[in-house]
Image (tube, rainbow, N blue to C red; front, side, top):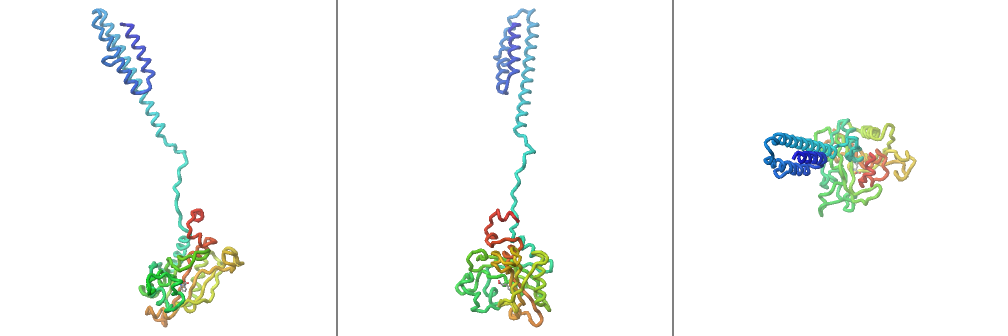
Length: 341
Ligand code: PHE
């Protein structure tokens, strides 16, 4: 029996020492210490021993049992430690791996240009107004002194909603002049940016939808000199000190006198190139002194008040500001282009 116990002990200890999973360990525990286990089987034979042999053998059996229990405990601790180690390895975060940078969008260059324009005018005491893109022909034309039959009212140029040409997509931001005169107290200093619509085919310089920024001042003793001074300041703030501008006489029904302002081409510096169509200049805006009829229709006395207004093309301004050669780039939203700004 002594040999049996010694054999169980050495076999069991070797087995426990080599065990690799909790399930296998449990199996071994049952095999040696379970009710039908090998050690239990030996202990059951104790009854056959003589009274003298029993105490020594009992002590030996107990010693083997506790040695096995201890070995089980050690093996189970070892397995737990290994499992923990493995989990830590699996869940480890390598803080030295380069991160995935979130892809941030950026402001469209045209809106960057608009923000600069707003800043410049707000700095001079102007208020920024917003208005409807669906407009009454009355405000887009009549109240702007463009009487029935004026060429700009033609169906081939304008998007009307109804047969009798009363409701339309505004063809200019100028109706905002009328809305400002109708809703605000004098003196008035406003700008009004927004979309406008004309029946144009898309090419390098045209689009059926584009943006304008309207500007208007009505006050006492306002002259053309104020208009030129303000617009020259705008050009220098936007395009840099020393920017060269040019005012050409023009005609608009709602201003008298009227003009257009050009800035020297940024591509060729005035020599003439494809961007300025060989002219050396880029047309930026129309402007002029508000026509007395327009003031009168808004119940403003032209003997007492005078004013000027301008309407600038926002896409063109952004093209000049950021040296963009083709209008279509502004609308195509190709990220390879937009990422440069
Ligand atoms: N509305 C004119 C246009 O679209 C521009 C303009 C605005 C001219 C204000 C004079 C005064 O061409």
